[in-house]
Every structure is written in structure tokens, then in C-alpha cells.
Length: 486
Image (cartoon, rainbow, N blue to C red; front, top):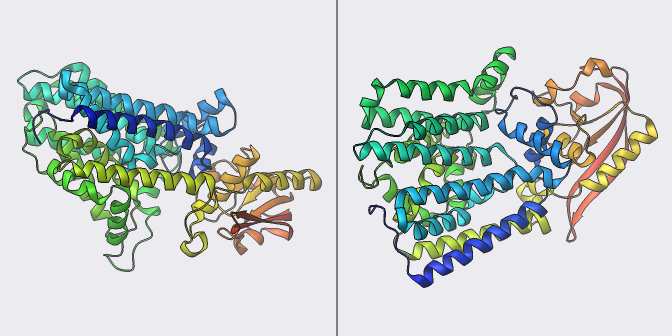
């Protein structure tokens, strides 16, 4: 990496600026029009059931969704408003880092970094949905910004501003409240200090900053203590199904990197990782964090299937420095073409009509982006007609999507697997009641659910079609005589 220099000619800079502005506008359109993603609806339901923390993840995303719903109502605007605000905060964080890294020559770095942020699929996807990852990205960017300032000052012979240290610790603590893999940034920070700045270990302020980060985890600690450490057990063990062979998880990880990072960033990433220690003062934390997170995720891939966004902390760490290493410049053009094509395809797939082979690929996420309003109307009519006590589905995904469409926080999952609905639904209180049950081609009602009722009768079948293709078949059932765990 060359020290603090990003060179773009006048015309290329204007092109980058125009593309970035157009993509920001397109992002707003996507946030407004894309169908509800399955896990978005689940986290929305968390927000309707306030708690210190939750089974699957820490609480920050749910808290903000609950606040948004209280201010804006129950609609797409309220679901995506926190995502949009965090997206703007991401852009501001990139601006702050460009000013810190490049001083008065910040504009080429900022605009190129912003363009890379917008045309790299991993960033585009996590800033499009109300999942915990969008908050993890935002909080990590701010933590990196403040820690970068702190370590740059120390690398230049200064003491390091207390403000940067404590604000970095605050942002890191909030990242931990967003998602557990924020721990990779914390580990990266510790390793960086041990390798490059041991003198800091003798300063009280480091431990005060660490205490601030840990203090913010108190809601999660309290919840897990009272719930027999259920969330930590799920993250460390319960969600990992294992592999038939140790290499079975590596190929999906590599494919995910090819799609969501793109091959055109591989060489710049190598340059970033192998850069001289002081090529950009203070950047050691970003490189160490990238390696800590990436090596950990690769190791995990030998034990279970790894999702593409699990390495998000590494991608957040590298983002502020990519503009320095985008050489040859043709890589910028290729990345822009790749990323814009991905963004357009994602929008069309989730907002207009499926582009994927839903049936052939088993693409339930795309299928579930369509067709919920007619089903919600049919379920509401059945509730009124039969006077049922509750509405339930086969698992948390369909329960959440149906509940969001119904605007009903009490729709529940009767899955035998543990999920957050187990904390909200008192099965014994509904014993003997009739219920409306929902199933579809992706989540049919299993015997473990139907045998809990005296009778289960199908009362409606609603095919979900788009552009002449049948994406799903929604089935509504009247179930009588609920006997929990019968």
C-alpha cells in the first residue's frame, strides 16, 4: 500500500461519484420494494417481544426494530427504516475514515471506497435487510475508525487520544450487542496490542475501555444466565449440524466468497494483507482482524456449513483500505460491473419476479418473498369464521412471515426444534383450543405437530404464482382440540 494516496483523474472521479449516487438511490428503492426476507420477519417478531436478549442472537437489532415499530407502525417502512439509517451511518463512517487517512486529499479515497462498498455484494446484501449483520457492519466500521485514529497517533509517537480509545470500545461493545462474531474484532484488538504495542498493556485506560465493552454485554450475560446459557450453547454447538467429510464445508465457503466478494477483489485483498506494517500507520489492527476472522471461519468450515456473511468482521476491517490497493485500475471497472449486475439481479429476484429456479434450486428464500397478503387475508377470515384460539406454523420462518403479513405478534411456531417462539408461547394456556395452522411446500406440517390436535382439516389451498411460475403452495388447516406435546 502506498502511504495515504489514492489517485483518480478528474473524469474518473466524476464517473465514480455519479455511479455511487445512483447506487445509493437504487438502494433506497430496494429497501422500499423488496419482499420481506424470512429472517427479517423473525427479528421483527423479536422486536414485538422485548427482552434483554434472545435465543439466536444478541438484542440490538430487535431493540431497534421494536423502537421503529412503535414510531412508524407495522409495515415495510418500519422494518427497513433502521437498515436505511445504518446504511447512511456506514457512509458517514467511510467519510470520517477517509478524512483521517488522507487529510485534505480525502475525496478520491472516499468516493472510491464508497463505490467499492456499493458494488461489493457482501456489503450490498447485509445493508439491504433487517438482519443483525447490518448493525454489526456499522458498529465495526465505527470501532475501526476510532481505533485507527488511536493507533495512528501512537505510531506517530503520540499518546493516543483517550476519546478514540473509549469511543472505539463503545462501538465494539455495541457490535457485541449486534452479533456474537464481533468477538473477532475484539480478539484482533488484543493480538494487535500484544504484537505491536505492548506498552499499552501497562496503562489503566486500556482496562477501563475493555470494561466499557464488557459492560455493554451485561443484558446478554443476564439473559443467558437465566436461560441456562441457551444462546451461547446454540451458537457454539446447536446450529452446527456437522459434515459428512471434513472438506464438505470448504467448497460452499469458497463459492460464497466468489459470489459475495468477487474474484476481482482477491488480488487487492492479498496486497492489503501482505502490506508492510507501517504502510499506513494504525492499519495493523485491520489486517490482524482480517486474518483472525478469516482463519477462524475457514477452520469452522471444516466442521459445519458456513454462511457467506459469517466473515463480515474481516470484510469490514479491509473496506477502508481497499482503495489504496485497487491496482491495476481495470479491477475497479470489473468490480463495478460485477457488483451492479448483482445488485440489479437481487432487486429483480426479490421485488419483481424470481430469477432463480426456485424449485430446482430449493430456493425457499426467494419463494417466500411473494404471496403473503392473500394468505394473510384467508387466515384472518378463517380465524373469524371458526373462532380459533391461535394461529401456528411449522417453524419460525413461516410463522414469522405469516405473522408479519397478519400484523399479529401472537402467531407462533410449533416446531419441535428450539426457537424464540418457545419463550413467547405458553402452550398449556391454549390446551383444548382450536387453531388455524399453516403449511407450505417448504415447511409442511409434520406429525409432531398434527398429533397434538384431535383433528386437522385442510380448509384452503393458495398457490403462489409469479410470471407464470408456481413458487409455492400455501395450505391452511383448521385444527381442533389442542393437546400440547400430545
